[in-house]
Image 1: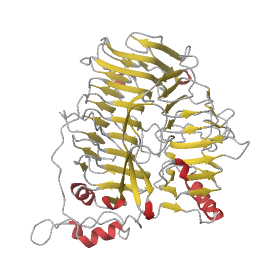
Image 2 (image 1 turned 45 degrees about the horizontal axis):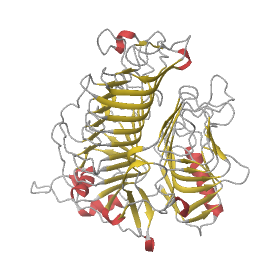
Image 3 (image 1 turned 90 degrees about the horizontal axis):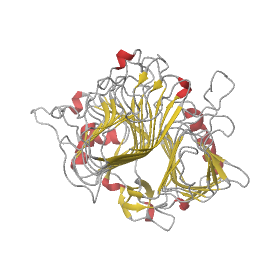
Image 4 (image 1 turned 120 degrees about the horizontal axis):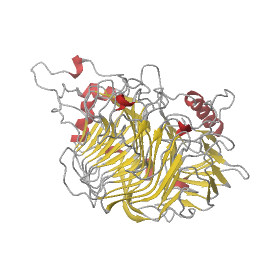
Length: 619
């Protein structure tokens, strides 16, 4: 069991960049890493001082892949440009292109289809400041379903996209569609109209998603969605449908609690939550980032009764990071007390990003992607108050990292209950787009951390040579060592040992979705967690833990390389009065492979004969 992150070597800092080179990189005039003659030491052997470019908050350089529209722009021009982005991104699952489409306050008659690595967002302080009269939608219309090449209703790979902070007013009589799976948040939205479908509407497959801080006037039809988290959302038109695991936390208008048929888990309040920071335009046209305050025992959206409590930070206090910006400059900006805004693109890192100051905001636009190329972490966060990481995809590099994001160093013990660190729409990938390896993806050592929608994924498909049992190796997805950590919407898939290890006390998880690794070649190769067990449980709470609680959790098997593989159990936890699980499910997808028990020695096996097993409470 990998219960702790391996020790890391001291950070090795290369030479520093000159002021002129830093400005050129920030302006996008130099591509890729700086040559040694620029980034190296000066003639006297001393490191040249770093110069962090200043950001003009009224006219920031957000790079070529941030598209900002105002209401005076002709709608035909906007529609044509958005159609061109969608054409590029429609099936571009593992490409390097990234886009953020931002709308200034106003109304826009548009039909926006959202493809891969595309973020659609309003620049108002409230969702009602920007209205799209039409659609902001995702269709299941490109991926073959089953063996029929003409049936393209499959939404199970509609990943890595999102919509946030605007109102969509759907034309009368028309239905909206948001047919997505993992890493496709619908956040801080107001959907006006008769209703929305979360699948293709007739026979399509779909595999999970998120509503957060959202208001939906019409009905929600979940259809074939296997699982879904609805957090702090107002469902004014009701909800119909369930498959295996539909979880509602801090929301209104929800269906009645019922499990397993229909599989509706309802928790009245979100005990502690901070909403995701977002970019907006303030008075006089100044770009700012709004950072919401923490809410406790929260019900409903943060904004439907008016602007939420929080603060706006001028973009002048941010370093705007472009692909090719040296990581040394990023770290110098952080050391100076600046925040970070990552522009859309793939950002290669030659060392870890060091977040040492409290209340630092690290915000990505357009699924900004960080790749640690030298075997270090992508981000290391000190054991400080109130750091916010949001809107980024961390893609493991070919040289294996001990972990991809570390929140707090090993042994962290500070109390952050009043001002927790939070992670929002933070996604992890090991393999798929390129060869990637990591011991594990996320390590949380600090106490009181909030996770708000995480997809932690070891690739089960992708470009040739980027995935396979001995290729994109990764033992664990998430390791939690800190106390009082709360996770909302934790998706962890395909890691090679325990998917999630929880060592901290008083942890809470609201919605968990996991698929075990598809690709163990033999039972022996998959190993064992010990005690005669077969394979590895999905979710492991350490034997020393005395308090832990989880609601609406699922573990699935699909051992398609060797259908004879068994996992002894989906969840493995200590028998302690304070360790409680509510509404658990295990599934053998298509009957391919076996999970023998749901939790510890409780629950029926799932296999070809019986493909779902439910436990309503443990113990």
